[in-house]
Image (cartoon, rainbow, N blue to C red; front, side, top):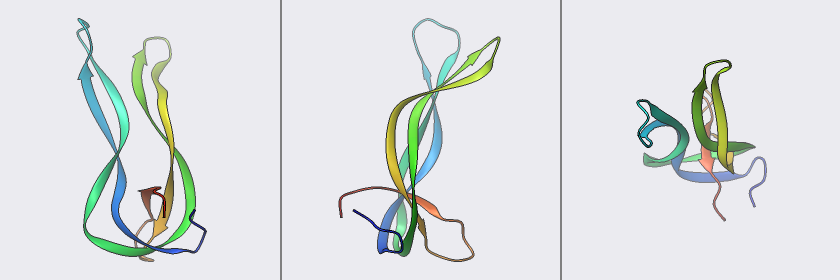
Length: 96
């Protein structure tokens, strides 16, 4: 497992995206919020500064309440800092 302060090499990072899917005969599309694992142009070296619990799920609009997010899948990600002037990135945890 990874420890705080451990130096690692990162080849991809997680980005939050929305996917719209037409389900059944309803006139609207359903929005899914998912974390996409995107490959970096070149590997970067960074340091682990934390862990986050993330989720993929479905976002629906309800008339009385508004937008309601329903998580479908949970997983953990590392928070990795690689440059002091940049914000940290999220990296999917894999076995070291």
